[in-house]
Image (cartoon, rainbow, N blue to C red; front, side):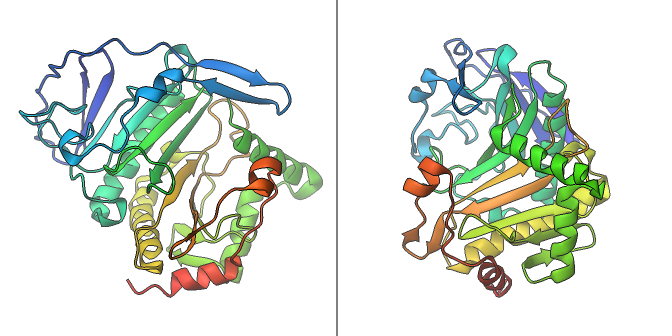
Length: 343
């Protein structure tokens, strides 16, 4: 994989990740762009012990543009996009409408493919493998920034989830704090360890899932995909390495090789469940950059709000107001349905 970093017209960084070592990236971004917006305001909610980013400039970001005006497609003579080149494999650039920036974190966009109409599930396994290497690279780079406390790589897919761009892409957030979900994970892991087990909580849960097999969707020598025992969403899957590692950057080349086909398989099983493109959020949960890394356990969590064709799970009163979840589908039923998908 060849890595080429260039500077965009407004000073943001763009990085090409090419699968060919002879790729040449000399095209210059010739657009006239305003300077990047100021960093978002970080406000602390004392009632919940959580941070909220106020980023009013994000109101101006594109909303479901046509293919001809998609900012993530390769540039053409008719329309200059965020990517100056006329083709690419995987490209990463600083978000033009960031939630965090400057000394308060960083936000990046990751384009999986130059094909506007493609989707993650249609990527060849070799491209998924490239993408894993890219995410590992970005995790290491953002973790080295002074203002970043946690790195989160994720993909939002489907209008039901709220995507603003159809082009196949993900995002990377370098948070200036440890997120609330991760803090809860770490607190639970710490209690588990301090009760005398001396073991990692997620590792013990994963071992139990592998031993039972009832909720396992797919697995290989190095990774396991399973529906968690207390899944919140109708279809929720964890993909975890069988070895405890804190983040993507800690994976070996062999583990990256084995992770790509399993991630691809899970995506195809989700789409095959109802023979419809499944809306989902897929996010890599990683340990904080500087604290409690021994308590963390890398895993990808994919969940969908679709509970049946034409039916979505909405986060209404109980979930949104009280954080008290009710799942309409038993995790064992979900796992069996996903295993039964004919690939």
